[in-house]
Length: 232
Image 1 (cartoon, rainbow, N blue to C red):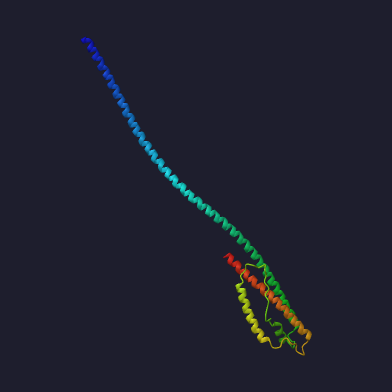
Image 2: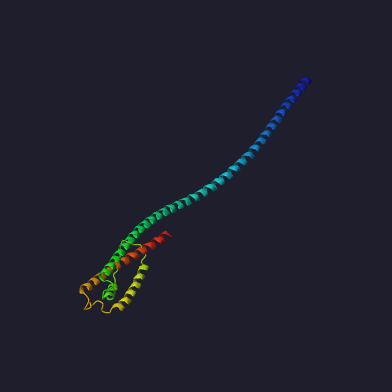
């Protein structure tokens, strides 16, 4: 009996040693696993923090891009508007430039007609003519009241300066007429009636030419001022 008890005790001691060894091994494995989990936790927390920071940066960039997109749309609309306005302005400048050239041609044409009329008057009344001074005064006499024709094709040009010039010219005409109202419309007895009538006819032509020429020059100046303002 004593021997059996000793063997049994020996077997139990061996099993206890085996269990202690297994327990120590299991504890070591558990300790290593906990350490690995701790390392993995730190790594994961670091990655999560980095991902969170990246997400915040991306969110800020997205919001910034939205602001840029709105500004880009505004600038694009503004650019389209400016391009359209530039095109309209260019068209208007070209149109006014064409009208200005046309008016300059008209002014040159009427200047030529005026020079031709003066030449005709000089041929009609030579320097040694008895009534040269009287006929020249009659020829140069201005109308008391002039009618200025408006050109509907020249819209959009300045008119303030034109009205002021007309008022000044009307005042000058009235002063000249006051001085010239001395019976010039009556043909002297010893003056050729036909010559008198021709001078009156030339004067009327001069009045008509000067009226049209003055209007053409005023419109030309108005168009030029408008062009200068548009090109500024």
